[in-house]
Length: 399
Image (cartoon, rainbow, N blue to C red; front, side):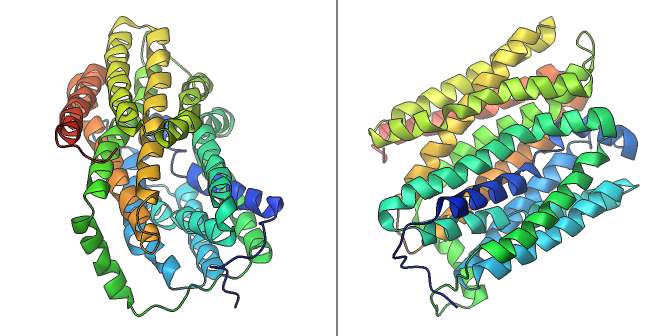
């Protein structure tokens, strides 16, 4: 097997975009359900208090996979590992598309999220193929594919559901991921990681030591867990609010709303430039202020029946969350090369845990006080995390 940890030649552009397309198709599976929770809940008999489990269990599975499966990329041949996980994703998608009761559906969504961490094996795989001088560009291009997948997932699933029902998007994705797995098996080179002394158990246990001994990781993970929790609360429940009076949106209308709102996530390049200029603290504070503002507008717009306020809130929130994510990733990637993969796994697992909590609490908040209660809860969570961020300024934390 080839050891590609010391590449000698530039990576072909076609291979880079293969990685980008793969990551986009995989990541999209995590977001298809968000605009469909009303349809899925009604079909499977889930209440308003439990319908958020449709999103929550997917995110919990993904977070667990980050901790338990992604570190395997440091031990096992990456192409085989990625294709194996994608095969399990296909089986999970088939189960989701054919489930007739909530138990099988929820179990399958959890399994789908667990195995979709294949995307987080492919990103460092792509980075390992690139010479140091090209690594940033290659990773940026691959991550752009992942971002496009996330951006398009919600409107695509809404459009498909409008014409084929909510199950159709999962059936289509099962076919797409199956084709992707076969293509990756043919197109990707072998990558056998360098031998290491750590057993799997020791590798997993080392995550705790990294978490304990890396204060920057803990801070940035906390910041984005709150951000992503608020983001998940918004996008998990906005479909229910838009489906009620005075909006009475169809799935196609919800798709257009999601597509327009997602434009705010195109702020990622701006965040990278700000971080490169040493403005991480300023940009982080600005991101939290914008996120808080978005929920003020969202609560106001929901109560007043103003579509424009809700749309402005969606754009601003996606903008703030994308900025904060890039700032956190850059800070984490500036740490030790030897543990970068595990640090990335921890960072993403922790903030996806925040997303799962946000989705779950959003369901309870909506059941108890409607859309306004969801916005209030998200605003409070962001405000408390902003206070924690201010302690970084007070103690001269890392920029």
